Length: 131
Image 1 (cartoon, rainbow, N blue to C red):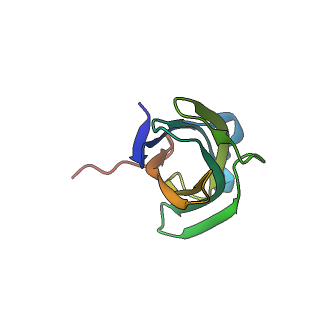
Image 2 (cartoon, rainbow, N blue to C red; image 1 turned 120 degrees about the vertical axis):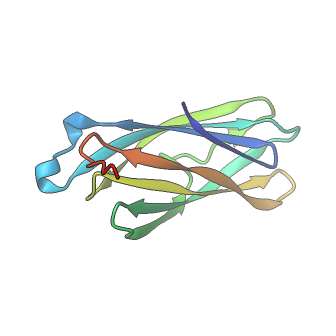
């Protein structure tokens, strides 16, 4: 089930996928892919200009990742259309979470941020403690 948020009629859905074959717990390397869908539910075109990810590992260490666009693109999303992409993240702990914002702009030059919902990165290598 994807994580979702909607800001200014732009819906962002994210679904994390654990990648066992790319991970190596013995070397503290835990890898996930995440699929993102950005849908324009509004009445005007928008363009994704940049991203700001906040990645927190299971020990509380925080990393900020900023850059232009996503996967080398700055997509323009027309009303009713969506843009999808897949990317990935690597942690040194068996769990963590990610979230952040995309900076968008309209044809009239208005600039605003939309929320990327915070989503959990969980591997089967996390020890679960029961009271």
